[in-house]
Image (tube, rainbow, N blue to C red; front, side):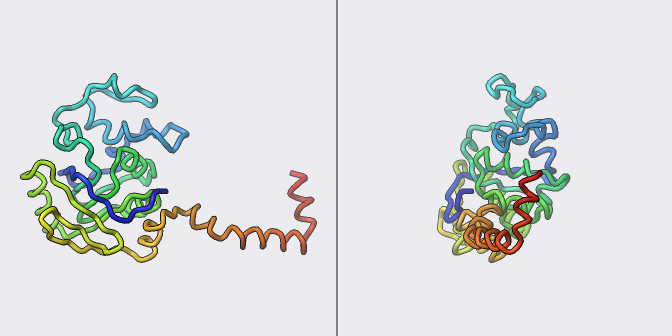
Length: 217
């Protein structure tokens, strides 16, 4: 997955509490056997006025002009500002896939559902937790200033506003390490590929019947 070091981006406000994963990516799109292509269907039932289905051409849809991501001032946003308990509901990993494939690299909210929170880190999205009072102030500033941007520095664990004000945030060291280096679970495992090959070679040398057993299947 892509490394996350420093990211500067436009902020879009999702001013709703308890946004669940079925709202983030509705269930009908889980039928896809691919891990790509979910970005056009992010927040599908809020984003469009007509019902959507897998494989549909987004250009044929009727956008909801009142939905935040359809408003011109938030076009190209890559940081999503949200309210508490974002990502609740089912454990579908498609939710962070859809957010990441739409273009979001970081999320800011007072709290997240646990499984969604973990899935974000495994898919290159940084979910930042800030106090409700700080998040409320950011909402006020985003609404007041078109083109509102923030810079997220993962290494320093700080969010910087355009005027220079800094907001520190916490992140678990192992998750930080993985994001900074672009390691998902598979990437972490492949770092030990030499040891894995050595183990397999030693096991077959000491237990050669395993090769025959495996080959017979």
